[in-house]
Length: 253
Image (cartoon, rainbow, N blue to C red; front, side, top):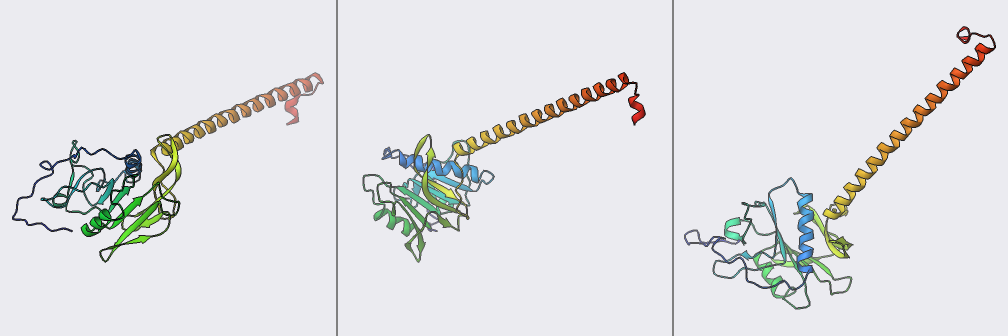
């Protein structure tokens, strides 16, 4: 954790700029973090001690401008303070470093593999995740873990992050109606968590299956009632036949 002079006056998040008016380079740099955040909101719905920021400034020095990763995850902080939500993420207020930062690489080199990587290591962010949709299949996802102040690349897809209790990886899927390779969260068994769209579709399928089972049960009851009615009619016909032959059907019992 970075240290600050308690005797000095530190600006609050309300006093610091919350926008630099820099446009997002491409749609993926917003859509991929949006997907990760929406899945977390379902997976951790009952937990309020985490925050996933998207294109939000992280202030680590009152005398320097904020750094703005495409996304970051912090644990042990309030999910939100009030209805206005966070203006920025100020380390001397939050008292917690983000545990993971994410960069989605665009056609324009923004230092994801050089200056940003070095800066994030210096600040002490435990995990640094880089997704480059323009690389070949083997290097599109790179997950680094800080070991002795140096980022070490962890192989695999997905990659398990024990300090977070989740895995992160990429695979083809559909989000916002767009079929392509997306980034997802995974459990320890390597099974990915459903997206909101998939969860809704699964719920609809379960409701439909339940309706079909109810309908099938009704049909089975109707068939049983029809068989019982038919058996009753056959029994009545048989009793009438016996009476026509001069035989009391009740005497046969």
